[in-house]
Amino acid sequence: MSRQLERRGACVQCGECCKKTRITSILSNILRQHGTLEDAKAYYSFRGIKFADIDERGDRVLLELDIPCDRLTEEKSCILHTEGSTKPLICQKYPWFEDDIESCGYSFMEK
Ligand code: SF4
Ligand code: SF4
Image (cartoon, rainbow, N blue to C red; front, side, top):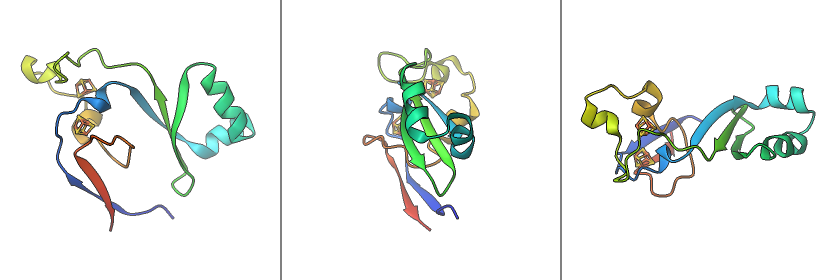
């Protein structure tokens, strides 16, 4: 059973979550495809994709690529704010769970 977490805090606009691309994947699918986690890690690492987090209980893997969002300005703000455009839903709701970004103003507590 996955942990029930409650998000607390607020965005302090550090811009860290916009500097990389993070993709959530399903751990059991990866293991079915690659056989072992070590093999999967090797395969992904050859393409510059890092396993940022592995949540075995939640059957989830957080993959990370060094691809920054091109809407992030040098001042670490999202240009969509000034353009009056709507941010993608995932940006509005970020972070969904612990993401190991130390500067993030959000934290999670067990419910
Ligand atoms: S769209 Fe804006 S908030 Fe979303 S990742 Fe890009 S810069 Fe960050
Ligand atoms: S990492 Fe957290 S505090 Fe920093 S910009 Fe993203 S949501 Fe805001």
